[in-house]
Image (cartoon, rainbow, N blue to C red; front, side, top):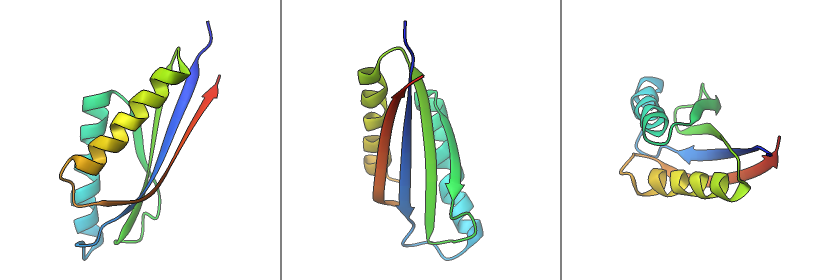
Length: 98
């Protein structure tokens, strides 16, 4: 049996945000919801000192590349349609055998 790791990297814009405190109030609940809803590893990965942008890394492990890809696409749709005060500027999904 082979395992597959899936990684989703999200570049987010926070157009209404005006401070690092405001960024935390947007990003931390988003991270918690992704962890709880999808049982994933999620972390803010870059741009931590900039208050108008965020980069979120999300990872999963599956016994199927297709399942990992499907899960990460559901995450992408959830962030896009979830009513968060973020705009997805770009994203990258990578699935690899481990």
